[in-house]
Length: 316
Image 1 (tube, rainbow, N blue to C red):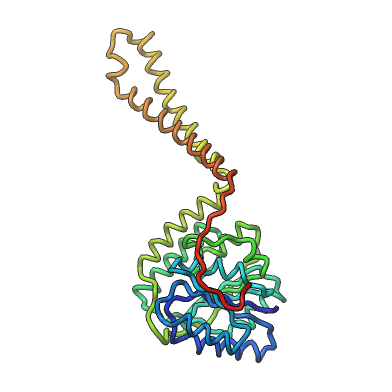
Image 2 (spheres, rainbow, N blue to C red):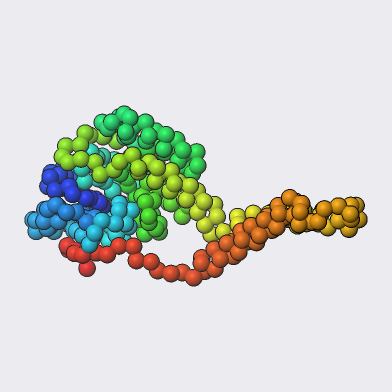
């Protein structure tokens, strides 16, 4: 199979039929073998009924429905697990992503040898204050922190080689940072393509300003994980040793001062240096224990279930 199109959605009943027909037209005109995976992330409208009807008329349409809303990252994770195409295309269901971009994205993976190609909505039709400016700030911070030189991390239109999606683990709200996850997994050839962005035709956006706050918090998380995720003792252990040395230094100074320099002076417990020493040694020990516990957790590989599927269509 050439292409798997993975489409996470939430309450997009009005746009699904039009999006499906548009994708099918592109696939047929380019003679691609394909599948379309709709991931219904707990919709409360008739989205699942629409997907069911589409699958009855087109055997290439497949569907997964979650029992409740788990988030876009979980939807992509489920879609990646089921995708069979050589190239996996992700796009939003709101018709703001243009399926006409698919052939060029496919070429950039297959012929140009990219592991991942991210869309760049250079010209956007969103609100300047609520989306455009926060998005520019967010992307700047993501570039500076991650080292991945993309202009638009949050664009839903992306293309991946099959190998990439089978080796990365998308969790929490990390869908914004899939290029960073791919880079950390060893897939370093990451391209970018300017894509057409279209105004929303139906419904309303599911994301508010809080997504940028969450995005920055996730950025801090992924930066920490990329540097110390496999070796937490290197961070916490180093901080613990430094703090313990500082505390021990103060304690040593107080002991020497009391024994040899000023034996008639104040009691050690009456001096502020004593409490600095005590606090830093306790904090240092806690940092060291945190690093040790982190190493133990890494070595106990627990399988976590991140979502619960309610129904599937055309999937084993």
